[in-house]
Every structure is written in C-alpha cells, then in structure tokens.
Length: 181
Image (spheres, helix red, strand yellow):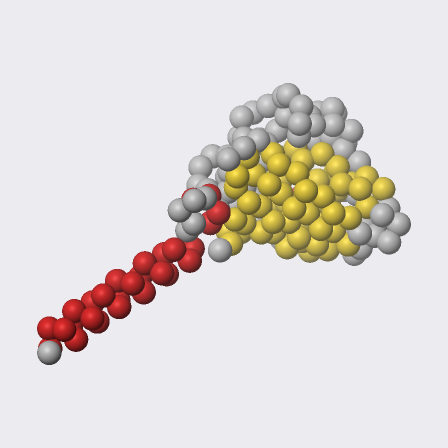
C-alpha cells in the first residue's frame, strides 16, 4: 500500500512539473515565451504615454505600439541603446540602438540601425497605434536583443535619412524594455 501511494505521489509531482513547463513554453512555437514590454512615461514636458510590446517571431520581432496624449501628426519612434529613462529629457537613453554600426534609415530599408522604427501617425485625438515586424532584432539574449534598451517617442517626424538619428526632435516619451512572461 505504501509503495502504491508513494508511486502515485511521484507521478503527481512529475505531472505537475510537466504541466508547469508546458504552460510557459509551447513546443509548437518555442519563441512564444520570448516577449517584452515597455511602458512609456512623459518626457520633455509632454503628456505622452503608452506602451510597446515585443514578440519574437521567426522573421524578427513584432512590435505593437499604442500612444496617447501626443500632438497630431507623425512622430519618430526608435529603440535607444541604454535602458535608462531617468533624465527629464530622456537623454539618459543614449543614442539609437545600433548593434551593427549601420547608418540611419527606414526600418524596411537598407542600411538602417537596429533601433530605426520609422514613424507613427497620431490622430487629432492624440492617440495612435502601429504594428510592425523588424528583422534582425531579438527578444532573447544576445547583442541584437531589445531587452534592456529604451523605446523613445520623438516630438517630430523621422525623415528616415538625416544622420545620425533622423532629425525627429526632442524625446517626448521613454520606456525601458523589460522581459515579460
């Protein structure tokens, strides 16, 4: 009787640990667990807020962005090298994330920085959404990982050509990118 109970307990523990692991890693899509998120805080006297989520896919990182409290029009959006948004003007985030030492450009053009995400259109009500996939980035560890970087929203449009950063003006929102489950 004791061995049957002991055997059942071991089976239950093994089943529970298998369930727990399966909950976080999908064998059909092992990249499903590679997610990150940045929550934006207003900078440079703005009222801009929002968030970006990052999901690693086979062909790059899918980025979903939601912004509110911004002025209508185009706003440059970039990943910056340092995960530090402590400065009032977000200068603490450093320059664009550029692991391959490329020149600035459009996210779907060549060449471009790893942090070049282009522009987001903000409607008259101050809100905007954008979803894009950027090749060459990862959420998982490595030199191309977005985790530990900063997501920055700029006051103006990125012209997608001026060096080194697209001439998009002051940094009006900043969020540190953190790994998520």
